[in-house]
Length: 251
Figure 1 (cartoon, rainbow, N blue to C red):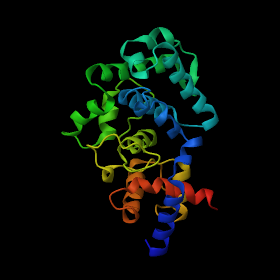
Figure 2: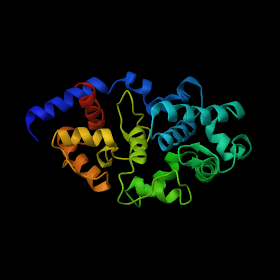
Figure 3: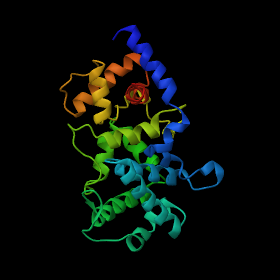
């Protein structure tokens, strides 16, 4: 990669990794709860963020209201998404049935997802605490997360797929010193993150020659792009996510 392109990507990351990035992005839900202001706990922040990430696909105008619906239902009930899940209040407060909640996921699919999330929160104080224990043995967080949700269709599990939503959640939890990402999981290494690969990111990366033009949306492609971005952002390749977002906006 030439020096000119590296400098361009760094400037774009500087421009777009700002707090206002969250305004129309699913990352807005990272601050639905703010423990420092006395609203919620770290467990609430992580659970709300995970639910938001798993529903963040398709049209933002459609999925953002759906995320709000889940969190508002929990807040009306117990004022806490983690307690709502742990106590099983979701079973009575949230509908059941085969009617679709969002896109191809039904209310039953959501209940299965909530149930497995609840089991984790019953076993540990938070998602971070639960995954940290396993991380000491298996340093692949996306695989660890997939194995924790064996019955949830909503959680991506393919070992060869890009798993964009999982990697986006991990970016939120692991990257530090960011006005967007929270960096709550200090025990995880930002250099081990994989770029959240979606259609827009792939298109822009291909135009810049960072990945082949006809590359598939796969884990292999995500790892290839992550490796390229590591040259620009050593130790923090996922900062390139903001740069590639900016490439499209700055046309």
